[in-house]
Length: 115
Length: 113
Image (spheres, rainbow over the protein chains, first blue to last red):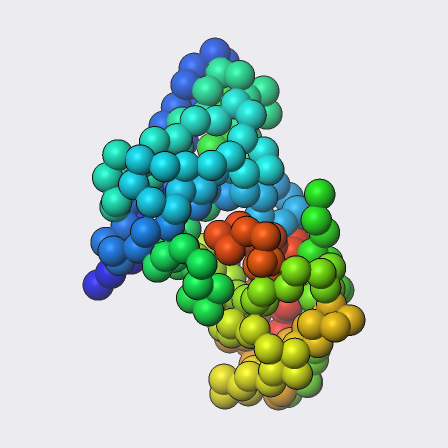
């Protein structure tokens, strides 16, 4: 079955530590996204990538970094500069650029907590 | 910052009740509106993609309408069932950036048997 796999499901970060959240898709989608959800708030866009080797900052990119070296992979690193990293992180993909008729496909999410 | 508003924030209904909720958005540069259903411990799943003013879409007991001129969409559930319990999200796409989705905070529906 095609889909998006996020790992790990739960992650704990120590102060000053960088952590990386994995997102892999086998849907052959060009576009991939990272969202953050906090209680009572909607999904906020962290970074997105329209194509391999390209990515753009979303609304809350500070303290995060990404890479897109392969079409199927879009890992998110939460750096020590992100002072409030505790949240639920969702990865998504969609078929391609400029087609608003295609919905996003989502992973199951990673819950990150501070130790 | 662009605001996509969903109301109500949460809703509790009895099995068999029909219900509806709203997604409001800025109408300028409208390109598409998506509705997603997000059950607890699962990933969000697409319900509808709506692009034209006056669009009406239906899937089983769930339907949606779109008014792009005034900037709102309604989601209706007829004869709610406990399995309809989920958070319903809407997401806006605009012409100025086809790849950036603006999500509302969702309406959490709880259907009691």
